[in-house]
Length: 409
Ligand code: ASP
Image (cartoon, rainbow, N blue to C red; front, side, top):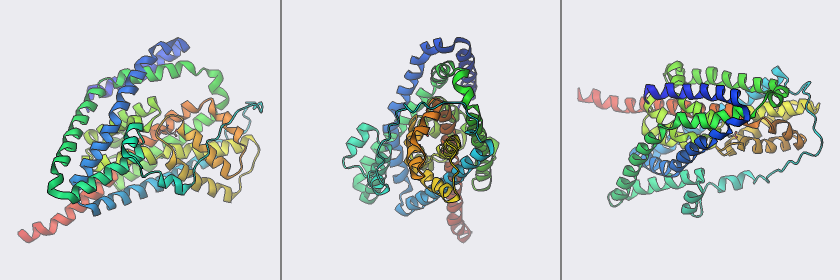
């Protein structure tokens, strides 16, 4: 990624905050710039995911390798999500954001709870009954499933499927090029998205919940700088500063858009160009991560549950905390990578331990602010997995290649 773009992103970020503070709600006029960027980035996603995953699968040329890649990726995602939710719970007890909060619930709050389907149905839903519908509606998990199967089919079919493979190869290249063009408007998009948010949230909305916001911020920073840094250093053999610098543009886009899926093209670009992750790995690990790996959301769920329990004066038992950790991890996996999804999934965790659902109204007012932080963590987490899985695949390749070299000497 070009150095100049990085500085433009930082500049847009600072400018957006200044403009939001200066002009307040009037800065809403720049919102179309944000929408322009969002639409551009959303229009890339479906063909990008489809073509890059197919290329990823066909270039591995080995179904077993795919299973290994999937196993490593999902284990890493699950483990870090569990750590994240525990950190969220801990932050809740350390900061006690729900004690002494002077917000009044009037009892009139409408809390609509979407019926969450059971775990079995959720898993079954990954299989699209009509792949074209999945593509048309942008159902990322179903598209991933379709793309992987298509890739496996192409590999098995061999010679006859070569034209299909070449077609998707070409399409992937085209999508990468389109992504590069769209990247040029990233700074404008960040300004257009962020300035209206800064302008809309006055001190009156933020101050009563400032402890909650600070707790989320601190837990997020710790998760990123400690857990991911240790993980990329030890498992990915990468300097954590290089990692954080490389993924920074994607983190800022995530912060501005509150959408992991929307940030995906930028995350892929940063991983491949700045972190030198192979396309093979990134095209598989990152779309999957944008859909199922939500460490920031997991932190938020742990923290929000403790906050709401404190507000209502409910003492959570140890077994309730364990339930929160387990259900919260599942809920974070089920969260879609779109704005506000994590708050809807929070109801699932609250229901599991019988917390009053109207407590959701407490956090709803500032959800966007929390969403910005959790989405950045989500995206950084996906990128850390791509670095680690890529390093372990490279190590494996070296090991399997080495004996051949020795033999030929
Ligand atoms: N907005 C988050 C994301 O896209 C999901 C959430 O609401 O927690 O990653």
